[in-house]
Length: 140
Image 1 (cartoon, rainbow, N blue to C red):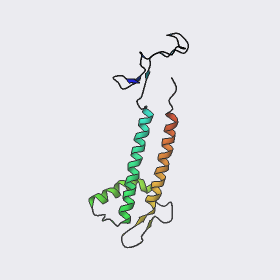
Image 2: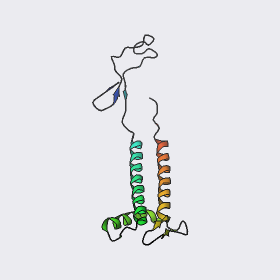
Image 3: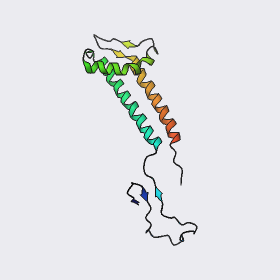
Image 4: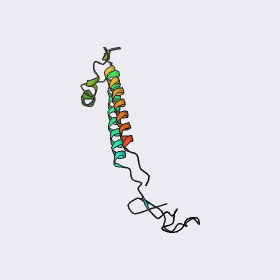
């Protein structure tokens, strides 16, 4: 297997031909051809969607950890993470009667953020499944 200058896989035109196969025009003859090894546009879209949802899930995990550890919301970094993740948690507030659990002191278990993680993960799986349907490669 060889590659051309554009990274495509190329059959070797000098490869020996099977004795049972004839030359061009004969049944069973395989002429040199290009086979694309590049990802399809749908594959690239799937990768982008998976990356974006992965970043969102990571931010939600950080939010849950910061709230559970009682992080200082006056800190710019902590406040920034709370502000960035709030729009993604907001649709899931009120799913259960308990949105937050205050175990001790200032630490909080954010139930709505945990439900948001599950909800966004399910949405990511659905979008990925839909894109996988469209990502079928047809035999040449």
